[in-house]
Amino acid sequence: MASIASMLGIAGKNPSRTWQRYETGEREPPITIIAKLEMISDGSVNSASWMQVRQAFQSRQKAPQ
Image (cartoon, rainbow, N blue to C red; front, side, top):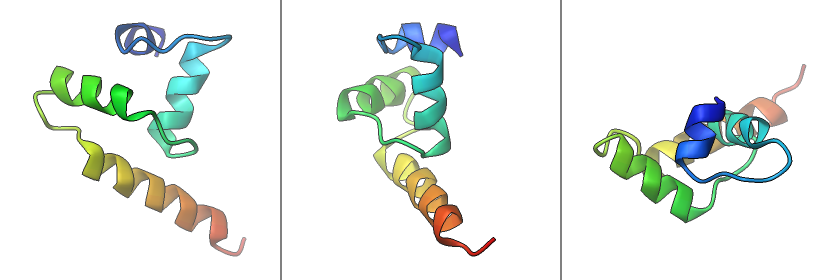
């Protein structure tokens, strides 16, 4: 995870954890990160796919346990 975080320019106290939060939908990445990821992945990852991840995360959070 550290390598992808570094490749995307994610900085801060714990870039790997930040990336993990983006990846699971816990947090929404800045559009600049999504744009870099779309470029790196040749378009297989895009803003629509990130929205799907985010919506799935929010649905899991609202579901009764």
